[in-house]
Image (cartoon, rainbow, N blue to C red; front, top):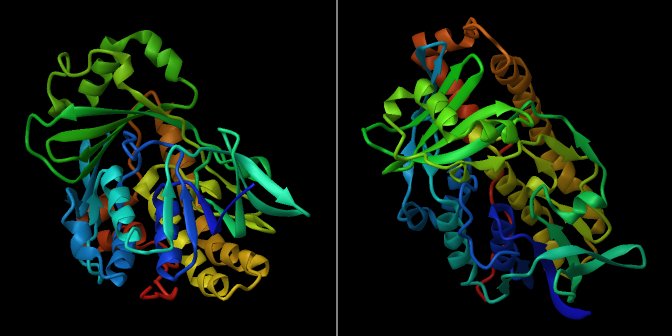
Length: 400
């Protein structure tokens, strides 16, 4: 077995790269294993919330982050039953960046990598897909790669490689369910417009995200209906989209093939136990989130910060950290449960009901109230922007 690092982090996504940066910044010998050759994976989540930018600011990196290409979203609007409602406002948040930064995730990950590479104890290995974990004496002591290599983790393995992680074959998963799946696609922006828009009609839900010169769009449909939709052909799907969002214009020259529709099979679940000796799961590996609110990436980063706050100093001191893995889970379990409960409610009571409706529904009472009274919009803005039990960087930093 190759003796690689004190800490091996599986997954080079937002949680893995953030954890890698924080642990390496503390001086912990850290290896991050990323299965892809690069970060150019289309339609990865890229809604960077104020809570995440607050962490970036605490590291003194906010100006460098905001110099990267991005769009800013300060308000959210939904169209429900043909009428527009303004539902969220982040502009009054007491935080360095009172907006959501829509940044391509490859830009975000490249930014984190650039910061981590200034730490001598950080290493990233690409095209290193983890197939499973190595155990020694009842303790996880390393990982096994698809290419047959085995890599030892002298102190700890952190699984941050998403809901497809091998950790989910080792630890029990509680499934909460999701009534929908999503097709992601792009539409060039023929007209102006900004912000974040949702279109809620009987049997059809669309989300439009401003990405500068194009809209990143989501067509939400009942769970398991992707192949049936594809079988109807692109013309029929295009008609559904044009009917729901006429502001997109004629899409006949834009959406020409169902291959342009990228499927996201929505899941909502969490591990019932996030650790075992030598192994800790964080981010989507520990809890798969619904895309509602774009919260998943930010919750995962909060996990990474909490893990570094609790584990970095003991790891650096050479202490046994197995007894500290459960406190990381306890710290992050409450916000995970509350966010998932909110997403479950929205999925079942709003999205699921709307997707199966055959007549215009009555809008939830909250929509006209939020639209009519602007101060009320600050509450959902705060919940989405700052979350629950947001973390602050308390892990140590070394100069070497």
